[in-house]
Amino acid sequence: MLQDKMGRQFHYLRLSITDVCNFKCTYCLPDGYQCDSSRDFLSLDEIRRLVTAFARLGTSKIRITGGEPGLRKDLPQIIQTCKSIDGIEQVALTSNGFNLEQKINQWVDAGLDSLNISIDSLKPDMFRLITGHDKLESILRGLALARQAGLKAIKVNTVLMQQYNANQLDEYLSWLQDKAYTLRFIELMQTGDNQSFFNQNHVSGESIKQKLLAEGWSAVIRDKAAGPAQEFYHPDYQGKVGLIMPYSKDFCVSCNRLRMSALGKLHLCLFTEHGIDMRSLLKRDNQLNELCDALQLALADKTPSHLLQEGETGGTSHLAMIGG
Image (cartoon, rainbow, N blue to C red; front, side, top):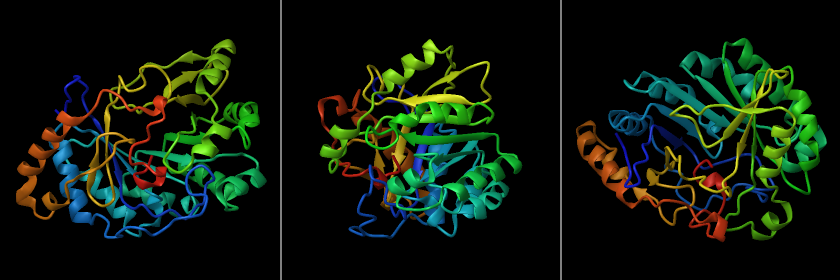
């Protein structure tokens, strides 16, 4: 089992397969994707070797991320490969949903178990203002198709921002009442290039938590492979609410996930200074033992916590770098 010096065990890998994104979200890539690094992304064989090593070390959940993973034409093959590896119990996907309506059946047929889609407003005009694309109606149709295809674990991610969508909280909750999705409100995070935007738009998740508790929502018990969200349910709602609050006390205590960039660098935290290059150990099948040893050794350097609350963002200039 992958375990760090604090005793935290890592059942969950967030695997970026591209850093390219076609949206221009105000909080992430307001000027669009800038091609400022190699686009020699991990191949299907390299992904197979990587996931095999993690599975041998106790990882049971793979979340495929980007950039925007839907831009890779071989995404169905990547899903199928990850799902076929012994020990991998769950394959999830995080996407902006731009081609969800057209591709969801292929992804489900390939073995996809759960889906996270970003919807930063339920108002078409505000959605377009935040993302730069008029895709809201197509994404909503895609979510309905995902449910029809048999996908039960569907999450909707929303970054609440003071100057954009913070006043839509009640609208989101009303929308969730008859939909069996988990709606996750994510605190805006400070990165290397958004200091002014962060100061103007950060909304504390704690205020939302207190509102939910006051309105009769109750906490859900966490699963070992669950992500960082605190989840809540209400007897009058089909859906659940999740809060991702990286500025909250003890946020990192339950950390159970590692990140691999699309260029083969292991990131021990979303906000670390440098990734650890593992690419050279992904070239041949007979390197698996060496790769496992390298992964275990790397965990010795994982720190107890990020320093976001102190304004330290490490080497993360924007969240598309390694999939958030």
